[in-house]
Image 1 (cartoon, rainbow over the protein chains, first blue to last red):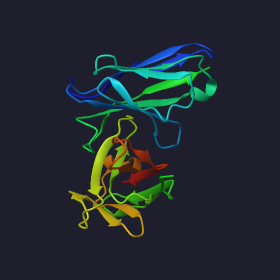
Image 2: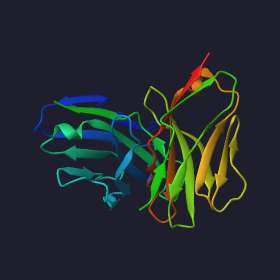
Image 3: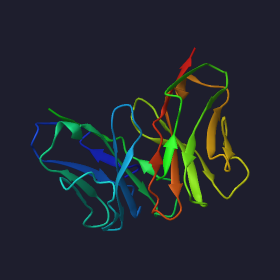
Length: 114
Length: 115
């Protein structure tokens, strides 16, 4: 596609449920990043993929959060046993490579846990 | 720890005037990139300008320019001839060379351009 696509745009889920957030990066971009942005704050790094492998998952807050990128393109961020504190905007970005080229962001998924 | 600080939560400027947004960062790295991103109400983060730390010359992109002071670890953004479309959240971000391109963001500055 022309840009980074994230689906859904908005997701409301009940506490304790499982959710999946999808990111479709720009075609040919090998590096993919997930960030979490709480209201009124800057984005915080969660995880970074180079190709299919997670090169750095140091930002994942706990083991309820997991992400995959099985074919080196689309990525899915998975959150188990959601908590109200997980409510935030989840942003995805992609780069041609990890070597400090411009990062292109999607419009994000607004997750609300009720 | 590497941190980015934006000390101005909100700023406002009259249309056609000039405004400067502040950013400081803390790192022991010598090689890195710095960025300013704009996030309008539509939510999509858009790159405004970038600066390589090894370059002494300040980056410029049309009405946007930076004042990069490496020794002071300061990276301010100047917007000249402000336009209504510049209204947005502005984030300063830091990217060390050796960390796979992950960005460390500041807290943001909400800029309002008034007609």
